[in-house]
Image (cartoon, rainbow, N blue to C red; front, side):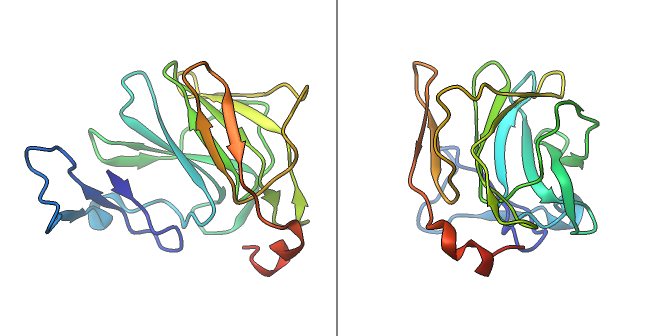
Length: 178
């Protein structure tokens, strides 16, 4: 299991293999020195993808200088080599956003929905699909889209539907924008 603070660039790992996990004193491995996250990632989302499901894709709104970007930025962490990269992505790039959710399926697709644009505080209800095999974004269908939301949870169900639930009162967003 990998964990990132979000407000820092620390990167830690916990081996959750049942044969080696000590639940009373879990042993975290600090990967920060050799595998520091390329930027801070508050309010970002991460999903597993790639051909072998060994790449963690971090979707965020901050570039390596921790400046807000115009479009969603993609970082990739190869769990085998433990190396971060900023892959060249193609397609219909989504606007930069925060407090959105993303889920991945077994075919290497990552579905991103909602969030808000920090610079304008506009809450979004668009969805985008990132193919983690060919690094291509496409805009998802708008028909029957969920209402705009932030600070919510997303779960991919076995039948392929994505369940979005929960949200934050949109009026308080300006206080927390990064």
